[in-house]
Length: 279
Image (cartoon, rainbow, N blue to C red; front, top):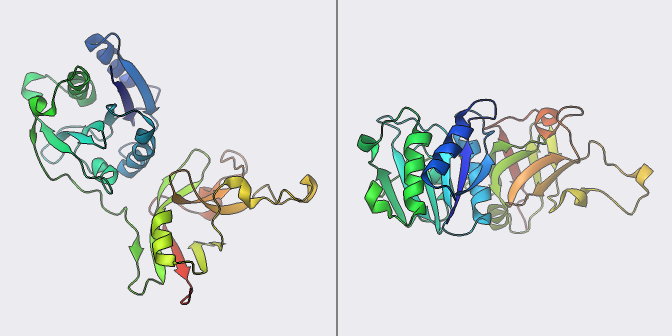
């Protein structure tokens, strides 16, 4: 039986997550449920998209991903089920899927049309669980929806490259549990535009001229511990998803602070990379 993952902004205090899991088990007692996150900031589409984009590929093909963020049905927020890269996604058509599909074309998209058969004021519980259960039993998307070709685009998530390719202008799209700041600038874009040129990364008052591949690369372990610059060491790196990340080595947002607070960066703030004119 396929795994069913849950990603929501429900938090852990209320009954919502437990109710959804209970509904799944009522449909299928032997279901396999994995929580990706229930701590997405309320209605934060970009945050949800980033988390799902970087988690789903670790699951086996055929996994069903239920996304419960901004999922209320209305004329501008339809419900969709998508087959993409061998995975199924059940979500509102609010733009989240467009980020997942930025580099991979969906194999099939349907607008869910079972609402007349399901009494619902809690779509994730009443509608998404029914769809996930149907897929899990081997059902096709055609039975629960009508084919569509267009989905809502999540705007403001793509970096801009200047006409002369001397600059990449990106934005903060996610701040993680350590206060690290993730931008929408990928390593692939950086290498295509930069072509080996020297560069300066600017993020408010913080500047960087190197991008590391691991957090510990910023520390000189040839020096004895008492002479190393570790606490509060700022660094830029390509994170595990190959996005440009600005971080503080071994940061703790609740005590010394993280990159977000220390650099004064929040969601959508600008991060720029300026390249020298000559390679």
